[in-house]
Amino acid sequence: MDRFKLLISAVFVLFILESAAHTIVLSSYKLKNENDGWTLHFQQKTRALRDAIYAERSDLKGVDLNSDVFLNATSSFITEHVMLQHKGTLLRLTPKLMKYDGLSFKGQFTVEGLEKDPDYLSIATSGFDTHEHSMKIFSISIGKESYLYNFRLDQKQALFSFGSKRYLLGDAEPSNDNQSWPYLAGLFAVLIIFAGTLNRFGPRAILRVD
Image (cartoon, helix red, strand yellow):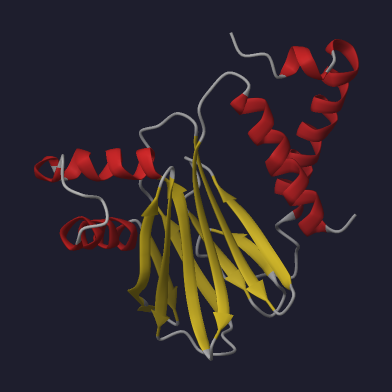
C-alpha cells in the first residue's frame, strides 16, 4: 500500500473512532490546478461554520446565510483562517463560488499568484481550534494524484514540496530524510490498535453511541 492510501485509511479510522462518542468538526481544503489556474475548494458543515462566524459577528444572527452580507462574512472568515504562501509572498484568495446548501457549505476560491509549476507551498490553518475534536484536512491534487495532510491542533503549519510530493512539518527547508514517515508510522499504529480492538470487541461495540 502506498503512502497516500495509508494516510487516507488512517484518517478514516481516526474519524470512525472519534465519531463513536464525539461530534467531529471537519474542515476540508482541496487545492487543484484547473482551468489554467489554482482553485482552493473548502467544505464545512453549515452549523459549525455558521456558529464560528456568529462568535465573531453576533450582529449576523438571523441573517439569511446565502445573502450577500453573510457570504461576504463567510469569505472573510475562511480566508483569514487559511494562509498560503509561495516564495515569501502571501497568496490572495478570491471567492468565485460560495453556497450554503442544507447541512453543508461549499466554497471555491481562486488562488492568485501561485505558479503553474511551483516548488514549495507554505500552508497555515487556524479556526475551529476551540473545538476539542476539530480536524482540518488539506489535500493537493497534482494530475490524477492527491496528497493529503491532517492538521492537528498542535500542528498548524506545513510545507509542501511539489518536487518530492510530500509534506514537511512547519516551514523548514526540505532535507534528504523522508520526514513524513514518523507521522505515517503513528497513523499505522492507530490502524493496528483499531484492528485489535475490533477483533476483541467487534464493530458494534466500537461504534455504539450512548
